[in-house]
Length: 72
Image (cartoon, rainbow, N blue to C red; front, side, top):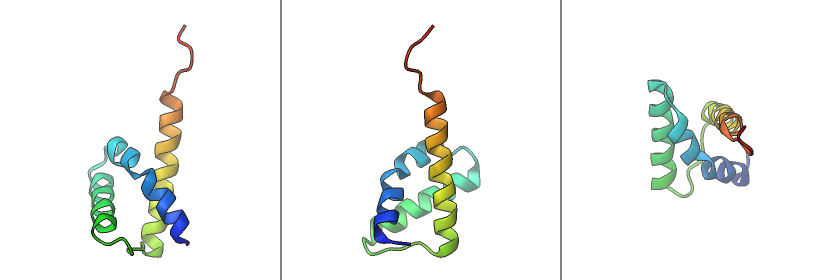
């Protein structure tokens, strides 16, 4: 885990916050956002990092699935 990776995940975090629908996922996403915003040196635990990676990957995939270049 590097600061650069955490920064990349947090740069995509607003998308995660918007797309999270499950109550647990929403609460986790909001908690991460609050912790990261309150302390610029904050680093997630290994478990948090694993969940963050998954949530960002799923949010990006969902965004790509919803993106239409040309409508029929």
